[in-house]
Amino acid sequence: MFRIANPEYLYALLVIPVLIAFFWYSRIQRRKALAMFGQKDILSVLMPNVSNGRPILKFIILMLALASIIVAIARPQFGSKLKTEKRKGIELIIALDVSNSMMAEDIEPNRLERSKRAISQLVDKLSNDKIGLIVFAGDAYTQLPITADYVSAKLFLSSISTNMVPTQGTAIGAAIELGLKSFNPQFQGSKAMIIITDGENHEDDAVGAAKAAAEQGVVVYTIGMGLPQGGPIPEYTNGMKSYRKDREGNTVVTKLDEPMLQKIAEAGKGAYIRANNAQVGLNNLLNEVNKMEKSELETQIYADYDDKFQYFIALALFLILLDFMILERKNKYLKNFKLFADRK
Image (cartoon, rainbow, N blue to C red; front, side):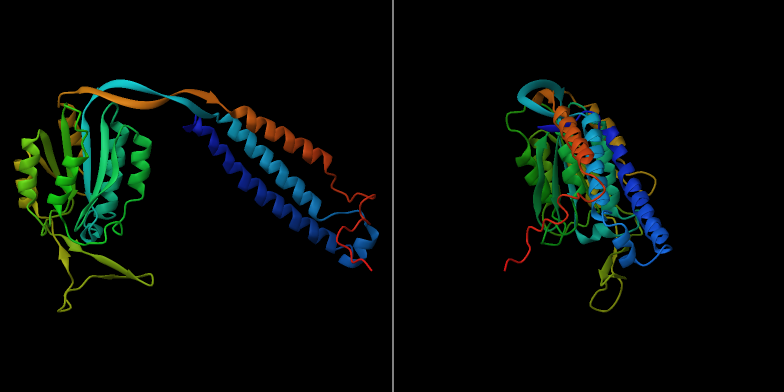
């Protein structure tokens, strides 16, 4: 398992593009200065040993050496073995609606993007709990199996889009049923599921699925993404924005179905929270989740991380030595040597 012990030092890599821009600017100014003294062909005869390519090569080598030093300072490490840790927490699965209606912009910037940001913030606040991600539209799919790896959770979360599920619709019941199968069957502690959707369920019996989940000890919470007045669904064609219309040419407005989400939460013995432009509501639900009884969880993590910065230091020293050995002027002993010259 690879990790960077001090990732904040990697910001120093931003100095490299600045140095590249400065180097390129100085090259341009140098060419302008030389052009004032005479034509290029004449100057090449007067300065036969001047090389145009070698300074660029030396600069590239120096930038690679600098990058290697910065990476070394950030301390790259590899985990040498797995160990099992026991922690107290719960298992939590978040099911996120990715149907086209989640692109409505009544919740800024849109329902889906706002949901993803809120989930990311929730993951940052978790400590000992395990989390899983499910995406659903007309069908449901596991995006991330239940895990204590919060870095992976945020990585998989960032890739979620409305293109992930080919079948359109809002099958909340299918998401709940898949969530029930995703929990660890050996874990006997508290389990919860958070459904984030606009609630326009037309596919299955979501209330019945939530009731079945509650009977198995899984608490189902719902968050309504959208405002009561709703909003149009944007579409993009060749970069041009328009809004979805029905067969009669009227703009389709997708509205939050609060009664449905309230029924699902009630059947799942959880709670319903409506999101708005001020807050999504995951923080309130997290408070409810934290009140649940914490049970012992077994988690495998990488341990005994070994520093590998020495390899980058060695690479940097080699590059610096190579830069020192390469002269900016042409080698007078090799300038007449032509490896690919025509042989007669």
